Amino acid sequence: MRHDLYTRFGVRRPENLGEAHWDAINIEVDRFARALEAGDDPQAIGYLKCLVEAVAKVVLDINGTPASGNEKFETIVSRAHELLATQPGRELADQTPFRNLATQARKMAVSMGTIRNNFGAGHGRARQPEMRSEMLDLAIDGSLLWVRWALRRLGYFAQGRPETLIRDLVGDPHGSIIFYRGDLTERLSNANLPNLEPKHARAIGVAVGQRAAMNTFNVRIEGVDACVADPDLTRWPAAYRIGVATGLLFSPEELPTFTARNLYQAMEVCAPVTDASEEIISLIRRVMDIQPPGPLPGEVEDNAKLVWFLERAAASRPQEEQAAWAALAEHLKR
Image 1 (tube, rainbow, N blue to C red):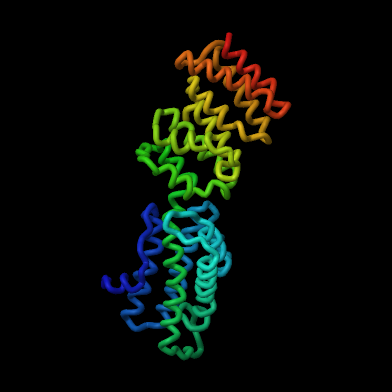
Image 2 (cartoon, rainbow, N blue to C red):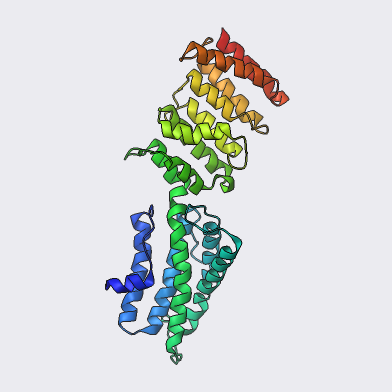
């Protein structure tokens, strides 16, 4: 394949996109390029439509909502576009005029369904439609405008998926990765916590808490300390906070990781949450059931600070929680 074709197409592999997903996209680029070299315009149009569809299906697959076998092309592209349109990223434009441009690009990409049906290969015809040279040029321009927009966002989107971030935090058979300064801040931004389903936000929070409890300082600073310091429940949703609290106290193997510092931050991170009493009470009871009465591992000052915080916070908690917070404070003083 000639390099200048790829330069012209501008279809570049995003960072953080897995091999299988990139192969599914790249094979359509190869097929399209071969059709161009062969001068087969109808076939090129057919493969352009396939390229748009492959990119959209990769987005949906990464999101865990794969396209069904009978789902229409327009619906597939539109669903993928909506997911990518709200994706944060340090180099991405989210101002309204640029969002409008992206919307127009989506409309052009969706048009490839009709263009392929009327002019592209893939259908036997009684008569071949007339193909004028500008038809292919317009199809290329319109399709690749959306494809390039989608690929610029796809790397951030893939990196921010809960499964990927959780794997990198607490490991899989291949182990976890090192988080350098700023890494988790960017990954959490890419995860788009405010718009995640609560179950996914909670799962990420658990993994962050568990990694912080392993004394990974950057993760604690950027995923726990930053959350504690900011009571905003939009930026740091309740589900994420409860997940962090759980992860600080229990390892991936469900073993307790109780220290005065971990419990202090677990309770502190939950402080802004006032509508999840059942989960918070359950977490407190779980700690008290496992931990014998008395101070936790840690400095005397840390234990004293923890008890003081619990006693002070108990009075301001929702009424149904107050007894549990006070009981935990007494449990730790015995």
